Length: 395
Ligand SMILES: [Fe+2]
Figure (cartoon, protein in one colour):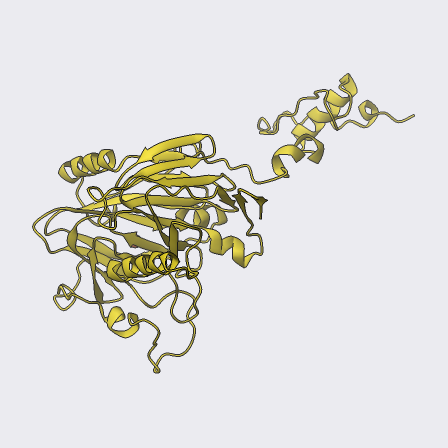
């Protein structure tokens, strides 16, 4: 009778040590440990093979189990360190940006907030320029405080003010210049980890300096003049585009939309996500879909005393507190949060938020949150799921 040892391949003594390590352990669904099984596993290791039966629980879990961890970063600590970086770190060709990324504690120290998303604080001193470049990564800026920086996207100077959301799809030239007499900080969100893991990145340096014609400081970008009017679009441009042509979404519009939802709810009309929780999604005006192919962005307003229904979804998100205060629960983690704080919600982690804002810490009198997540990736692949726990059960 043939046995494994009769047919065993000789060990390749010149081969580097294998990264595959297998242990024969007793357990449900596992073969009984034996010297012959151990020998089989050594053969797998030599030939760089891994059997499904030792991996299935990790590779094919019953539901998403994220490598990322819920985590909170305090804005005041980020800002202090970014300010110090302003003293020590120049902005110029090569480093490109004074951007400092959130590193999720369980993603190996990489600058990844989640397995798909980059989130960073960027800091620009008075008079400074961040040089022009372009990359395939889709990006946006969101401004929690300050003003005086213009981002120049495709030659269009775009003002950045508190509450503004500025998307910029991949492969567009962009630079920044600070025309104010104060430093300015904002957050950048990109799909850098997603493009890194899926190996699709391209990058090019642009001009060393923007032109004088681009160094102007208009109140409105040309893109806003063309696309920033509710409910209408230019007839000269009727083709859908894969990303939004509107380069800045002004806070005045977002604020009014959230306020109107709550006013309608108070009058007995539908519109809010749930009682006390208004939300809007930033959309591409040519399609009605998400602003960027890989990133969904939304703004939430949660009234004082409201606790949102626990909710989880496939894919990860990063939130920033735009205004107000409250308590956030993500899985087993629970934090009190205030203006500027950032937190991560990994895939399938349950999120619930309680509004605790007052007139003294919030212009709207409510807790306002900015959210960005990777849902469009999963929606495109028909892999998006969400689960909301209501008092009557799950829906
Ligand atoms: Fe960039």
